[in-house]
Structures are given as structure tokens and as C-alpha cells.
Length: 309
Image (cartoon, rainbow, N blue to C red; front, side):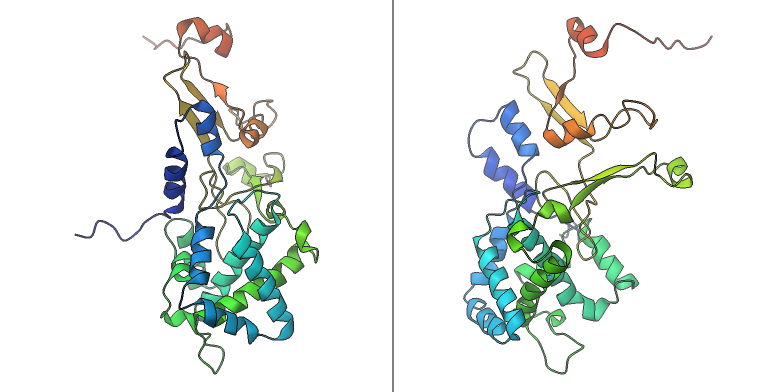
């Protein structure tokens, strides 16, 4: 029986299992879980690189590159093999890892589905934001896929050849976007949260007064603290949590939570964007449910709505 033909990425569930099995959980550990930025996909990538049928051919493919690209590919490979999977905004290796994901997608698929303005390429990018993607599927497997061949060259490429190109291209792209000092690279300089209003009024007025500036972000589509970007297009955050909530029934007031921007839709209000900083720092607010705590949480003023007769 086929239940579906569309699945989500498994890495977030895998990370939940890792953390949940580490011991007893409480409010503090659950906050840490919701803000966790470690991906399990990085370890899978290393396993693929070291597979018996891949390790030697990949080394040979890297050795066959022109000297400049060969040195870049070797650097990228060495750093990715040492990468711990922590996608913090300040991490240089996280930046390289994500550059490799982006460049590998282009090296695998763009020759068949391009240019980047084509409906086929845009569909590939859009699909990666909503379900398990060909980009991930090809990196971890699909060694016999026809997409590994670069149709723009007379020879037939294979997976090791395209991976070698992707490793070199990741460093080339990083040099262009982040500079030649590879140790100074930061994932958050590529990957940013943009607080952009989607209201029709904001669009009519150009958005300036409604939008809030970009800020560095960590994580990606595969981390518990989800912060997905458009895989094959750009690095800015495309998907992020709008609401976080934790309920701990061992507490007198069990519910805590926070939203990502603010409660007001009026950009002149102090409550329009006052939740952004707490959302970034994990500063949850208690949500009073006990009668004796209402005034502490909600104040003394009441607005009573009475149905008309």
C-alpha cells in the first residue's frame, strides 16, 4: 500500500530522538531542544564520502581537477570531514558546508534543468522547501542517476567527478561571497532572518516602515531550530518558527511560549516587533492560566465584549 509520494526530511526527527534519549527532560532541556542547530545530515554526508565505492574514486576525481580547483576541493573535503554538524551563525565550517550543499545542487541538476529562471529549475528549488528533495537524495545515494552526467561536456561524468567539482565550487563561491580568509567565514553572514511584512498595505507602500532589518541566523531546513533557505537559489531564511510553546505540567503555571515578531500589526506600536529579540535569544514568557496570576500577566484592565440584543 502506498501511503504517500511526498515525505519530509528525517533529520529533525532523528535529532529529537538523540536528545530525548539522552536523559530526563525538563523545561530548560526542551528550550535547548527547540533552539538546537545541529544537523544529522552532515554525518550522513561524511559516511557517503567514506563509502567503499566512493572514497577512492572521489580522491581520484579531486586529483584530476586543475591545480587551483584541486587545492580548493582538498581543503573543502578535509574541513567537511572534520565538521561536527553544528550550524551556528558564527561557524566558518557551517558556511562551507552550506555552500557545498548549494553548489552541489547546481552541479548535479542545473545543466539539465537550467537556466535558473526556467520553470523546471524553480520547481526543483520549490520542492526542496516542502518535502524530501532530489538534492538530498542524490547526495546520499542515486549513484547511477543520469543527472550525474554533465550534458554540456562531451565526456560522461559520474558522481565522484561532480562531487569533486562541487567541493571546489563551494570554496570559489565562498571566496566571492565571504572573502579569501576562510577562517573568518560565518554562516550567519550568508544566512539571515528578514522580517518582511506580507500585508497588502505594506506592499503598496513599499514595505520600508513595515519591515525589520536582516539579522544573522544559524541552522537550516534539517535542524530542530528550523531555518530553511531555498536550496538552489539563495541563503536567506525561507522557513522559520512563528510560534514556540512548551507545556510542563510539573510547574504551577505550565505553559510558556513566544512568537517571532510582535502582537501588533501596527508598525508604530511598541508591540509590533518587540518579540524579535526574545525570539532570537530563547526568552520565553509564562502564559498565566491560574486566576490568581491573571493580573500579573495581563494587567488589571479588562475589555468585555457583550453580544447586542
